Length: 452
Image (cartoon, rainbow, N blue to C red; front, side, top):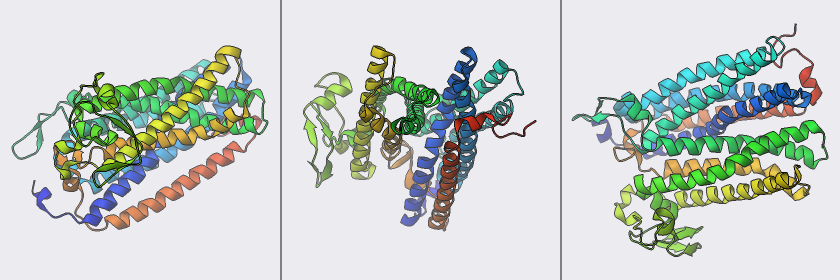
């Protein structure tokens, strides 16, 4: 505990938080692709085999190349993140590493399994029997799911620490791995994250094909790519809205101060309103739409439900309410906009078994990928900033966990340059792939392997 007594340079704390925010914000998109993209790939591959569909086969071959690139970039960004956890937050790892490190150890196993089966799948084109090759892709999806679940449980543990005993010296003892992994926040954080992954991946991929449809590329290959990607995202979207409502109610119980920041609740009491938009200025809400009693009704299905306000804790224990609230509203706005677009697609498909004909639909669909990413990033701002000033909720403050070593600002600049270069390289490679004709994907025996 002597670590916590040393003074913290304010520049260290700010640079460390900014660095983690930037790297996590970059990596989380790749994590979503790692979870959901293999599922889309398997859908295309299954259709190709089940219905002898050459267009679906070309989609699967192209998507396997994209998965290889995004996995490689994700491996680099994830490795940097793992080093950051120890270098930037020694107070967290030193005091709680025995518990917090368990999910990351499990994630490492899934990472290597995913890498192995991606290699088998890519080099298995025309070298394995069709269904054996398809089955070699199933572990990719399972490993991506398991790895992301492990990391999400670590974050859930930070919000609801469990599965250990805190000794008299402040050290963790009697660690129970299942208690750490399956803490009170695991079920709703994991469900929310997995549905977000299918939304982000589906809408991002669909936005590429939507641009092609906008430009008059109405061939079956483009239409099929759009239908698979957008269809998966459209199914996930209403489920995500429901899961988000459940998660918000769980936050109301488990982290009432975070909930107060999300809804700008200043005073504890019943008949609590919700606020759409707006910020706090000198303790007053400015510029927002206030809906009376709706906060209590949504939280407890009763207007008499008592909602804990920001006044229930000292100012030093309050998160930055404006940041959390605006991120919350941004996530909701993007989510409901995507729900409307998914409903448009669904109604057209149910009525005519065909895509919408309106050009406006494809204009909106082209922007859906960006909207899904915005919703994802805003949701993580709510999760992480809403927990402040705690890095481990109620047990360890962020300021007490950050490194005291010099050079944090310099490391942030270096990491910023690396990630910009990494992102630029990934964009250029994927753009180059997208400009290749679909027929070119089938010319070699395998997408990235040697030809016979």
